[in-house]
Image (cartoon, rainbow, N blue to C red):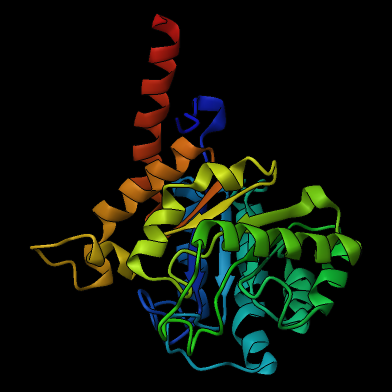
Length: 287
């Protein structure tokens, strides 16, 4: 039986802030610095504990963005957002930098970020582990099969849950060997990153296996294409059509005990999690 959460175990919400022109759901909406800051601030007010800023799209088929361009995209929004959060009394809200490159992460940390979110799990730039160790910041390690441009080209596994978990634990070992404190490492099974619909559903159904490692688990399912794949007989063709499915998958993650949900729609997730937490609390009182 899946682990059920209570009010004290409700996942944190990580609000997505893509300052990119080509992200799959919100590409181009927040390339303007002031618009990006306003959106990040609003997500924090709505209940996000973390704002995840990314300057390179990792959607299927996306093209790479060099370090200099990523830095140009993310540093000013992070600096201004950190200042706005502090001025608004939201000092506990953290900012994460979504990048695979040490130089980008370093510039973002200097600008006010406090978490590194690396979809390559340190494979693309191993120096990112040393940076996380030097700064003493958490680092999220995600599983991805191949690279964004090719990851959906016929992905294959013998046992997707076993292989993804083994990969992540190997990357944890690499991070710890490089000096990162084990308790600072988060896991992300990488829903949609080199997986078919069946692979994604298998991972969602086995999130407790990842939680059982004792490491924080980040789940990113927001508006992803697999949701449309679940909708046999009716359509959810656009990312903006997939909020109901996103909420359902997020609740599955909460029930499994994940530490955080990476989301576009903060208010809606906060409401869904509040109902789950209230139900769990009431159930525990009446037993």
